[in-house]
Structures are given as C-alpha cells and as structure tokens.
Image (cartoon, rainbow, N blue to C red; front, side, top):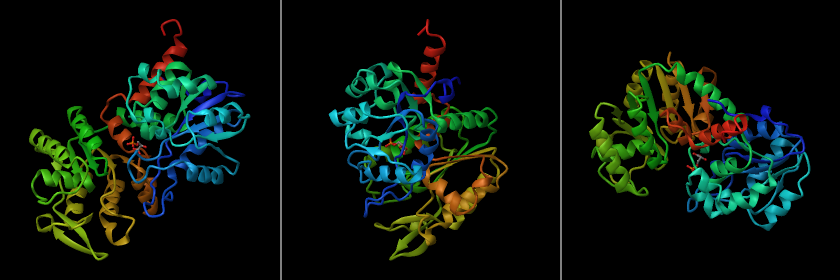
Length: 405
Ligand code: 3PG
C-alpha cells in the first residue's frame, strides 16, 4: 500500500493540520483523564514537526456519553509531556480558532477543542462531500499539509479524516506509518486457525466487524468476553434478564442471527464472577440472577479459551475480559493475556485497556503487535479498506500521478 509520510515533504515554515486520536478514558466521577497513553503516542509526530506551525485536532468521547468533554485537560497533559507551552483554544472552526491558527509561529503547537463540538464531525461522509463541509472549507485555506495520525479512528469517514485530504496534500503521521507497516507484514503471513478474542463495549461496531471477519476468512473461532459476550449469552437465552444497554433488542437480534448463520464459530463464557458488595463471587452463567453485575470470566472459561488460543496460528485479542483494574476481578484478563503471550501464534493485542494491562503484567515483550486502536484495528483485520487509508492512498496517487488526479 503506497502512502506518503512526513519524509516526503519539506515541513519547514509550513502550517500543518495534524489529526490525532487523543480519545482517552475519562473517570466519570472526577472527569479527569484516567489513561494518557494516546496523548503520549501523539508526541512522536508533533516532535517531527518542530520547524512547522502545528494545529493538533482530535475528538474526545461521543456526544451524549459521559466521556464527551473539552480538550483543556489534554492540553495540560500534552504540555507536560512535551515540556513546552501548548496553545489551546476553546473553539474548532470559529473566529477564535481561525485567529489562533493565523497567528501561529514556527515551532508552536495549537490544540483545537473537541472536533465533535462541530456537528459535522459526528456524521460519516463520502470524501467528496466531506470536502464541502463548513469545517473543511473554513479551515483548509490555512493549511499546507494534512497529517493523519489517528489510527484508532481510521474507520471513521468524518470530515477531519477524509475531507481535508481532498483539498490539500496529505500524508501519514508516525503512528499510522508504523501501524500499517507492521500490520501489513503480519497479515501477509497470517496463519490459520485465526482465533479472535473479542470484548469491548462498542457492541454495534463489533457486530458489524464480526460478520466481515468470518466472511473474509479471518476468524475461525471467536471467543467472546465483556459486554459483547453478555449480548451473545442473551441471544442464546443463557442470560435471562435485560442487560440495560443502548439499542438492546437490536443488538441481541443481530447476535442471534450471527449464531444461527455461523453456529460453530462462537464460544461464550460458561462461568463468570460477579461483584457482591466488593467481593468476587464465582458462578455458572446459568445461575446468574437479575441485577447481578458480571465483572470477570470464571476459571473454567479462561482455561477453555486458553486451550483454543494455544492451538491458534494467529491470535487477535481486543477488549478486557472484566474489570481488571480491580485486583479481585483481574484474573480473566490476566489469564487470557498470558495465554496469548505464551502461544506460538502470531499475536496482536488491541485497545487502550489491554495495552495498559500488558504493561502491568510485564507481557508486552512477548506480543508481535500492540496497538491502542480498538474498532479500527478490528476492521483493518477484516481486510476491508479503512476510510483513512483510502484517503491517504488517493492523496499519494494525486501527488505521484498529478496528471491522472
Ligand atoms: C476509539 O476509541 O475507538 C476511537 O477514538 C474512535 O471513537 P468512536 O468509536 O467514538 O468514533
């Protein structure tokens, strides 16, 4: 796949639109950032742009969700990590943001507020339509180059991702460059059987990816954990009471259809652990009562899943198996990550939670590829072209073959 990188451009004196993904976990009680990994990752590309005027743009959370907030806290973390002043503006496309962009000097870094404050950034667009959004038409005139470095949002066709590359030159930042190089290398030699261990809370996204993974022969076994595991257990009628999640009927019906279409692919937990007044209580799934909070996998499930992982040629794991941050509910996540680390398979670990869990358990060295991306990476592994990658390829094609553009 041919995409341009920072090395293909003269960056001195240029004004750069740098799209990163600083979408971090936010503690709902304090509204503070509880994991800064994605901000740390942005540093490398920002440092590569020391001779430019850099406008950093990112989203945080989704409108209506608890983690939807402004970027002021991120600006402070960034300032500490870079050990230099970060300009921050509580605006995205208005007069205040434009004023700050126009007045930037070489070497300065400006962080815009949450891109999703701008309504357009909450919708998916075809690239040509994204180029016509107010965001792109107002801001693009200030920029010489768009650097896309938000791999965790590579599956979104939002204006900040697919719009700017239509109207100004674009290239990959250091994270995207590395992710794509490593993943391409891994996937060209990926061996069967493909075992996918899937947790995580963005259930609708996951359901769509599951279908593609199976259809594109990238999933021989799917071992379910976390909220998506509970959805499948509801679809199997093994969990009787509603889970109380958004669009529950729709997601349970979709899971039910998938089980019907691919009955041999899915494994769901046989035992789990629930939280009773802060204590861990083990039980079979069939003994769950209404209102019980599932906080972890039980030992029989960990042992069964570990055997399937041991027999894999390629293992991909995304999303924790439980509340591993609480010591008494960490054995599922720790057990599965150990099985992945000790397997002979090619191994990929995805998402911010598992990235920090790997570090906590000292297992990171034994993994072939680790990424803070969640849903984007799952979709990448299906073999489908992600909107960001398509934009970068088109931008490279336009620069390399200007007459055909
Ligand atoms: C992620 O964390 O998966 C990315 O930041 C994308 O976020 P989104 O699913 O809200 O678009």
